[in-house]
Length: 489
Image (cartoon, rainbow, N blue to C red):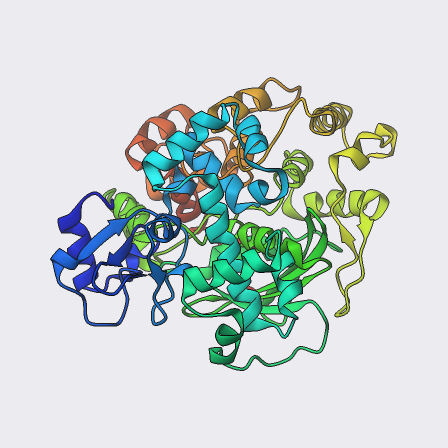
């Protein structure tokens, strides 16, 4: 979008927050860059240039605006609705792969050469993987500076910087303030008493309907791993350097996030996965506009706009849970998952009580005795085959997964039909166009609304909803009074 100067100027002049994260405005006369909704008086059009990323602005020598804080904008929805090389690379960078493993490993995960990855990112985003990762480190550093009282040296390494000098230089260059000045300007944060606990605000593009989003997560919560408590969804997180516990609470203009981390180096990854879990980088206006064009869906969209797709923080975990949920009720699926957690999960300490384990890893589940599973024999085979493939690397589910290829790999496994493959594509891989025409809830809603109820006919009818069929599923499910559609009290 940043190449459409006229459209960008209109968005800046109208201070349209819907475009935050889509592009950034660099002001030639001041040397700063802003989000489109910056509250200051818009500059003259001839003094504005537009960039596709904060990293590109920084590469061009611009500093972040102190008023609108463009570094805290929601992420571009492009990376959640596309499955090409650039989008997959951006999802991996957000997951901290460049900081942990380097650019060569990023390229290897994507199946391309380092040079080709760098060239495509530079062409589309105006910055290569190192610059994009550097911008992300700067955001993490600012967050830690402003929300904790940690020593600057510890913040530098927790944010991913290799040295304190690099940390100081980057913060000064990006924010035009020294780390100490950033801390002194920040509002005082209330202390939560426990070390390693951070309170954050996760932004999103309005509108956001929390009912089905938190309702689904709460209704399917696995005891010991997830819970709904005091208006917040809480769960344990398996992270690269340790584990964490997160509490997510819906607010009118943000999601309140409390993170307890065993290792602060996991902060960037934890935030990225929480945003992905709640689908916070979606563009609800674009989604609802497309679905509202269908006269059958229009009343559903108008009644409760801004529905998101509840996703996951761990794709492998969700795939296991999808198999456990085949042809059984939500309660039965939770029971099966809870048994696996109690027998094979990693114990964790929750100061608030309630959460006891991390969901077992594929490696832990690969060694289980199928005879201990209270499942039909065919489903035991399905589950054990899946976890073996995940454990030995023959099947990989993650941010870099190619959606069509991974779906084909899943369908080749014994016991995997279209429903299982598509629900994994929708919630674990993040495919916004995944569709569930065989799902009982979808078919029941289709009959009540006068839509075709057979899978083939419904799929043909749903062609007009592309590329947002996963969101259409949320609106169809919402016609039922099932607990997954209701915000817990």
